[in-house]
Length: 278
Length: 75
Image 1 (cartoon, rainbow over the protein chains, first blue to last red):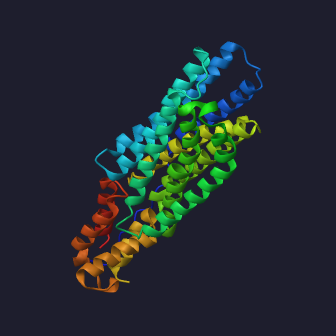
Image 2 (image 1 turned 120 degrees about the horizontal axis):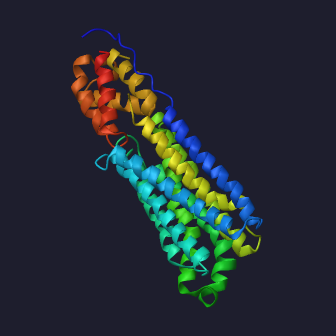
């Protein structure tokens, strides 16, 4: 064998396909944001309102399809394929919740909270948590995971304490079963706790693991997932607080879930590129 | 660092970061009872086994195959 003569492969930047697909998804979300402002201001006809409502729901379905497609392309037999498949299932569960919510609210005229939609929404936490556990565990042969897991758990507990004193104790527990019903109390408690224990904490753990390793391009998609999880947990918690405290929601706040799932879809597109050597 | 160590870090670094790439080198050296500087191209089979074990969970097999081929081609 001879001394090194072949230069190392220079990783490509993101492909044109990813830039175009990602740009299209961002543009669609931008369009929905504009429609959402009009929906909030009640400037739309009934038909336009219904079409805009379904447009938003359809975007969630599109995000889920993008992620699941990428996961299947990577392959279920691959460790990383499973990780992305569970991220996709999480977004798909959220999309199913949106479909149920839209039908109940828009077409049946029923109060969609609490309802079967919440069952699907809360499933996103479970699937996302599984994805994060798998992603963090994939580094177990490379680095010690104990410290990142402990830090992630501490962040979760501190955030949960904040949720308890700012939201659960003064509003949700105060309302109790009498006002919310059993199912309403369960899901109203589950959302803020799910945000911190199943989204924020695991995402922070993964962020610490890849930050400590100074990870290269294979970590790019996971950084986007971490940002998405932060956006999701912040938006969800702030929405709950705004709703219960009477501060009132806003279009920006309601775009939080859409933005988070958009980020998960963009992350999957980036993953498709970084897992491709040639 | 030896040619093999340099090659591993320069090839894997952009994908998994220099820390992980260096971990692959050190794990190989450790399993052979050598230092990173003492690794030679003849140690590639052991390196390959360690890279597959460490990177298998974080990257698809095709990516690991390609990176190993890149390392081997440069030796």
